[in-house]
Image 1 (spheres, helix red, strand yellow):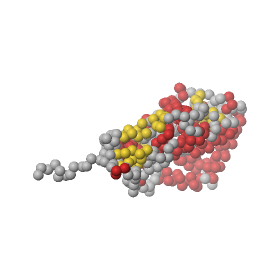
Image 2: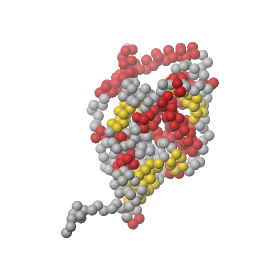
Image 3: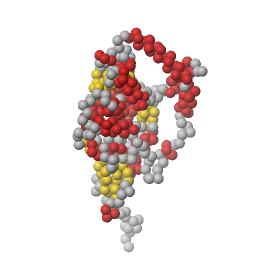
Image 4: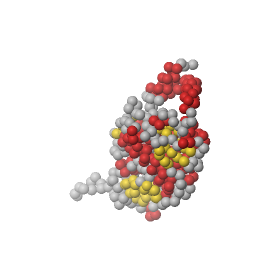
Length: 382
């Protein structure tokens, strides 16, 4: 049985980083010409580096706010404290305990011991909140979604405020698009029904909770020690980046499904049919190609991380040219296709058609036959 020192060391090792880096998903890692810098721009502590095929996190600088994980279009930065699954499970418990309300509070206001911990979800910072959790709750019938901050105007982490506002606006835009009356609200104080009646009872429960947690950690110490060893080893035996990003048989880099986006789409579908023809959103994108300038080189399909753009096996009538297939639901607006385009004839727009968003059939983009390349000897005079 490990002692308390062992428990503390294990906990510190596992929590040394609040974010897990799925580097293979990062568009900067996949292509050094990527223009994406959303994670670094959102980080208030300059703890995130994304440049020249490198994605790195300085755990010493990181303040665990979660802002970088919210803005990353390819979900290359995964929050660990809490995980998305843990956050959703905790929110479900709070909804039951509060009679149908979903209240999220930052650690600053939670530390004031004014609210009943059973009736709100504590997050390190409201910058950790993202659309899939909020829309998922609304789709399950929760009509009261409230984010409570600890007076952001005086918080030393107030640089995250624009990001929090962007998340609230984004979630509300998506809710409105589906005709839902639910809206995400912000406040700097707990509502009356969430306030704690007796703070002394909280102190007692917190003390009991410490020992309960210690027993749980001790029980799983052996398993956690293995995880710690792997973390310290830093994946020395893991495949190299070159091996992990090896070209597939289909001629593309490895692709993945954007899980948060899929959860958002599921929630929107449960909320009902769209009541608007198009939405301006940061979550999905629409690709437009100047087919007159396109050389059909296929670089956009090679680097697309989600397979939103892919070469089609369909043959145009008459056999002239080729098709690309584009799926709005799979586009995460990472802009890597535009950055990789050799002719700079492709753009990604944030306004998407709701009909196309929920259409299972991809949009076909017809590309003309590329001009024939001149031969090596064609320029020689006879």
